[in-house]
Length: 259
Image (cartoon, rainbow, N blue to C red; front, side):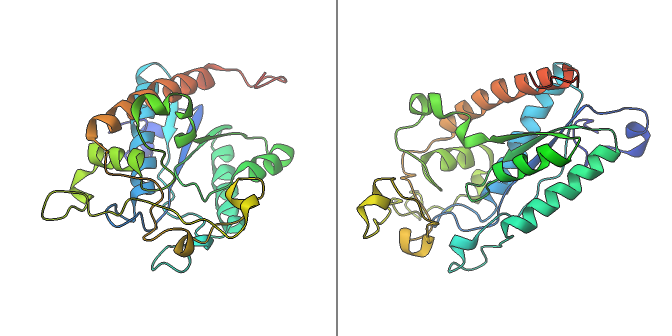
């Protein structure tokens, strides 16, 4: 039994040990170009959560990792087969219910560890700040490495590109599809422009329909991905997020928390 993983923990342990912090990983089930599995976001959230919580536990944090939610918001991939959608309101309701279970178990510090770019949780955090005794924190892990991204990777990655493919090669390489030649069975992750310059330049935003934006659901060139790059990515995430969980676990819930 690893006591920082709720799925492995038993009641003998939990009735004698009160956790301070819960980490809820959030993934998705959707196409990732031609070469990565539908569960890429699910696997990323789970594996990162396990590594981060293990490191935090070993450094004294009283933390528990909840089972990963495998579905996310997929409304802009609805034209692609088996992109399994939960509307934002549905997903927010699930998080609210799970947070209430944590509150009833005495856990009031919660980290949402998000692995899916289609999930938008800031509005939920704003709502729950006003009506919940729990303190929610949000980490979109792919944004937590933005300041050092160029030190590891060559190409930008929006979806199933170099970063995600490197992670897959490091932690679930058996699920990465290759051609008989050994090359990745992926296109180059090119994206199409809209007819509006304001949208293309980022002055105006839209919900991007991925069947029009991409050829096969990939945005970002994956062909220079390596397992070593995925491992370097994990090193940064573990150091940064485990350190945060250690601090969060030790922090008192006083009137000025989190300041």
